[in-house]
Amino acid sequence: MIRLVTLLSISVALFAIPLQLIKKEAPNPKVTLLVIGGIHGNEPGGYFSAAILATHYKILSNALWIVPNLNQPSIQADRRGKYGDMNRKFAHIKPNDPDKPRVEAIKKIILSPKVSLVLNLHDGHGFYRKKYQGSIFNPNAWGQTCVIDQCKLDGAKRFAELDAIAQKVKENINKKLIKKHHSFNVKNTNTKFDDEEMQQSLTYFAVIHHKPAFAIETSKNLTSLAQKVFYQLIAIEEFMNITGIRFERDFKMNLHDIEKIISDYGYLTINDNIIINLSNIKKTLRFIPLKSKDNTFSFTHPLGSVKKSAHGHLKVFIGNKHITTLVPQYFESAKECPKSFAIITGKKRKTVKTTSEFFVSDDFRIVPIDNIRVNVIGFSGRKRNESGIMIKYNKLDKRYSIDRQNRIFRVEFYRKDKFCALSLVHFKEGNN
Ligand SMILES: [Zn+2]
Image (tube, rainbow, N blue to C red):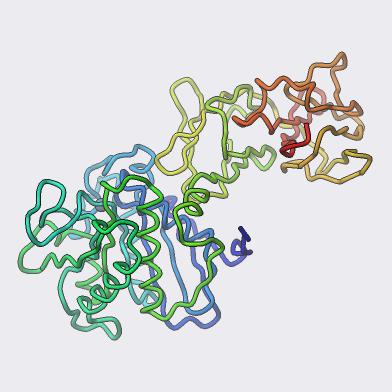
């Protein structure tokens, strides 16, 4: 899989509340598609798709804006709405509603003159059918639909034919079904006349402000997250085709590739001096050298988040998945720490940045640095400072690896008793 250099074209704007808006733009965009993931916290198909759009697509013409995790507290809690249904708060919201800052922020983005079309991503119950065919397949189901509030949009300059657009998207999705019963339909909620509840929704807010808007609903009853993401992404790609957004992606549109991407959790950096590889990570990591307060966390994955438990442990999430717990050991941060260090591995000398993951085959030795003590976690030698010592893979206690495959170990740097940095050594497969 080739990874396109897309990260450079991503700019992340943080509002007063942490609402992520990722803008991917080609020069002089005429059209902007806004994709919103995670209005409902227990619908991962939507927000994992938005995250993949942000990290694995390159936009060649026009613009794609992505809000991957609108309702972040509900995503972490894996609930539809931690503070009630956010998608019923776009007509009225109480001043003290905890969702208010997020709802106001997304309204502002929707109303930006640049935004030409809005997609709101959901996973809905069952499989929508016009006739009743049982509790899963029926007219009240939402799954596998492209939802519109009305057929036509008055006052929109472009993309006003909502029904015609949704029909075209549906037809093209139905050419790519994994199973026949996954077929897509258009669901028109006739919001203005028939659906008082939906008058409070995000898409209806867009529609009454003359912005074309659609919801994409994959089914909660699909058997895997990869299947939901597959349908979300092919639907979004249809919308990019219709709006004239040319794109490239760095993977093939099949379940195998999507599964691989979903299980890649990326990296967590803490305080700019600790790096943790989150893929295949063990359930608990102990003695993580943190500050007693004001730690900062940054993830390469757009759905990464941290929650502090009552014991001061840090639960790490990717979307609704609780992937590991970090148990801290508090240290003061040292001043004057090295930005890089040298290793000798297989007779070669390499320079490595202190907060990074470096790869070796079978063994490595860290070239000593003045006044800096090195501790390779899982290696027990006779010396307190492990710089200058040859560290072999088979000498490491695998209980201390951070990953379930026992390939990745922590290399920590200290100045006297103060903490400098945590790097990772990753032993490549097949050599030892
Ligand atoms: Zn939903």
